[in-house]
Length: 570
Image 1 (tube, rainbow, N blue to C red):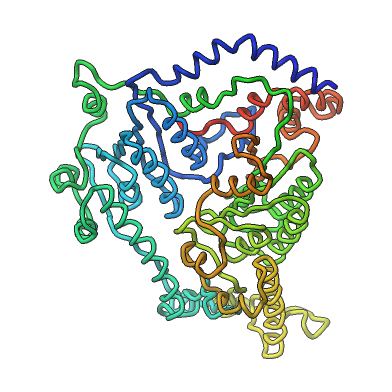
Image 2 (image 1 turned 180 degrees about the vertical axis):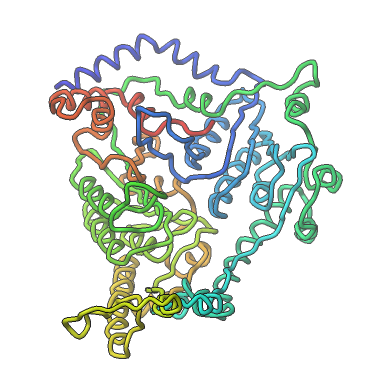
């Protein structure tokens, strides 16, 4: 009842403000003004939820889903003169760069100018966006480079031996080469094969983008890349970029000279105004929830350190989403290289149970391998970008043997033992033959469980999955050919797939992102209200006050979504 009263109140004020809101939407960008999108560092597939409200958060990465919304808005709006994308220090996997380029290319294909502005120069990462740009400006006196790709590792076997450390590595799968640099002096043929194929996919994508964006042959694009490093003025002379400019020269170049420089509107403000709903919403719309599984998979996240994929939190979250009647479908966005086998299995089971009741679509990010693919296999449909790194269906365990190192310093450990295998995992001694056999039997059982889970999710037998396993990683385009994923695309395609299974249009659902490290667990009763209450109210303030705050947040969808996800473009 309280929620309905709030919705009626919000609907009334929206009707009162309808003329002003309509004018604000139409004037989101005055005619002839450029929309400016700033990208610094990281890219993300989904909009990141904000974890804290009382402190200024770290700048959220640009999300490809918001970029797609921005391009859609500009295609429906003839007012903007074009889009200027300012990129500084891009650090993103090939799959995300590929997704960004595809969105820019849609705008370019519609005849709208897209300017790629690199004020600090760049490397192969920035130039991989060339296919989506009609014009490329680079900062004066800067350098482009290095312009190639490389992948590999430093092989440490001899160095570790000299230090008195001997690694002990056990694996299931001939391509499960995660720790081979600790036990070998050079790259194995298996690792060379899979890593070489990934590099071929990434390099061909880079060459194709540069050739298409600059309207040159693939041979010319490779010749540019083989230069290694190119000064800005030389790049302009070669045609690699259109001009080398200082910051103040860009508006003059895009406008009518120094007298009438171009004007810009921030992409975040433009999109917020274009997306603001005009009509009052009296009925709650179905909700599609994007669950983020990012980082290394662990049983429980530590209170500090890098973001991890917290199995305890995501398992509880999956169970809550399964029970929540307002959640119509779930998109599981996986960007994880894997991690703990038990943690992966727990999350897989929770999402299998969720998939038994609601549509579940997996969207693979830059890397969704090993345990990351394990949990994704619970979905009804798996979507991946062509350059996504996935697969790695295998098991590996490693530990350093520190006995020789301690002996070198004169340390002499002495223990009393009861039980033949009490010292089985002691890092000071290697496994005996029968201990190794038991440990390998445990790894084999884990590997078979992994095969069975993937086979069940893919609707195949374990024998059909086994040739695709062995720990080998696949690019998304190769995984599609082999049936490990169902279609190519990003979050927008995954949301579209979920909506198709609900028989609703993507525009008619609410999209909410949860599950990022630091975000409070999902509450069916109050997904925004709980976060607000925990942030703003003292401990023990009273459950009634928390519930009222939750209903207020749910009644005002626009305000609630703005607080939770924001428009993270500028």
